[in-house]
Image (tube, rainbow, N blue to C red; front, side, top):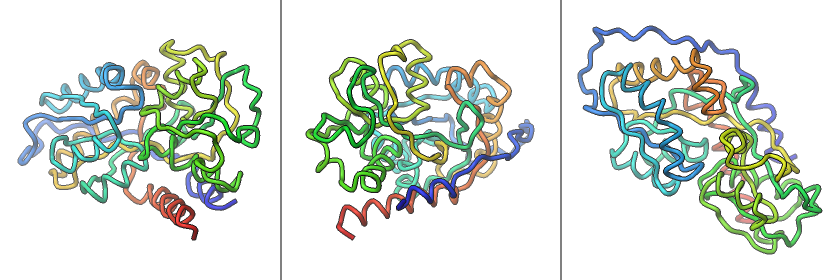
Amino acid sequence: TGLLSLLATGCGDSSASTNGPEIDTAVDRTGWPEKLRFGVIPTEGGADTTERYAPLKEILSKELGIPVEVQSASSYQGVVTAMANDQIEVAWLGPKSYIEAAKRADAEALLLELNSDGKAGYHAIFIVPADSPIQTLKDAKGKRFAFTDPNSTSGYLIPSIVLIDEIGQPADAYFGEVNFSGSHGTSVLQIASKELEIAATNDLDYGKMVEKGSVNENALRVIHTSELIPGAPISVRRELPESFKQAVKTAMLTINDKPEIQERFQNGGYIETTDAAYDIIRAADAYLTQQQQGG
């Protein structure tokens, strides 16, 4: 129904090659930054995020031959703003924050993150405490609910559309209390501790929390899963040299041959992508805006 059917047809499995070209040591490095500042949205919280991405820092530094810094802002918007102000060169963004960065910071999508099953995306999920009486979204009227961040795809955009299309009401009219937790990790922990009665997050970040032992999987239950959402993009400032973009892409694709890194990230590696892969998210964003304005 509504825009959800577009996700089902607009984002399928990908069979694109995961093998990038070898890095040419004689590549023209004119215009390259002296160091790569890699911005990461705060899916788990700043310290946990930068720790998780330590192996990526090592890979990029080794392959590119320049120092690498991993930076995490306190909000999704913070990473977009940093890219717009030329404070970071490359960013790991969610699809919704990417379309904002493409508009405000001239970001260009290079790679798309695969899920652990090798699919070119992930799912938004609604979670509740394991012993909650809530079995479906229709049982959650009047409950304490949390999105993650206004610029989150799976923690705000898609769940908002799910509620409008399946319940017929926006979150603030349907739930008794609506908050923003700030990160997917915080939402998961607050459901496990019963500070919240229901929350929106995604299966990738939920899996990361379980994998690293931050939460007991038996403490939570998934009551709704969305259609597949295009995977998180690795993006770069468009103005940077093509040789730099290609080197970043090639370095990142080496993760496809490192199962221990994929396990740490709880993903299936990366494939090449383009800006057009996120047009479905632009359509979703426009649809939600129209619905919120009573269109």
